[in-house]
Amino acid sequence: MPKRNTFFPPAPKPSTTGTLVYMLFGPLVWAVQFTLAYGGHTLVCARGGAPWISDVVVLAATALTAVLLVCFLVWQERCAGAFGQPAPPRRDRPTDGIARILAFLSLVAVFWGGATVGLLDACVLGR
Image (cartoon, rainbow, N blue to C red):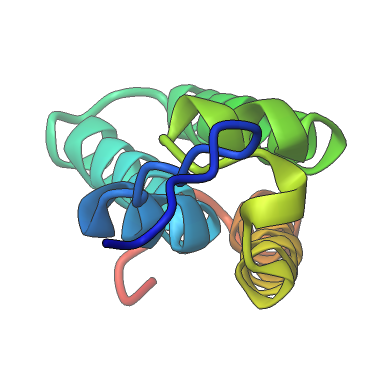
């Protein structure tokens, strides 16, 4: 009969879904920003709204998602716990690294997608 370790009980296994969402948090937030920015822009332009409104939609979506990604990068330890990851000694370091790299790359993509406000005119055909 195996002996039970009473000082260090076995750690609960993290859920697969929680781990995937934790690692892919950056690309998921970027996808939401991309959808909100370009979907909102298209909707405003299709309804004949003022071009500055579509710029506001893109800037607002970019700012909100950039703040969300920066908060994830700053408080990654808390976010990991929120997604059901175990405490640091028992958590895989590569999982944290992958989540951090993908969140940073997504932050770059969010800024790149929001830069279209300054580079292109809003509500122009062929955009």
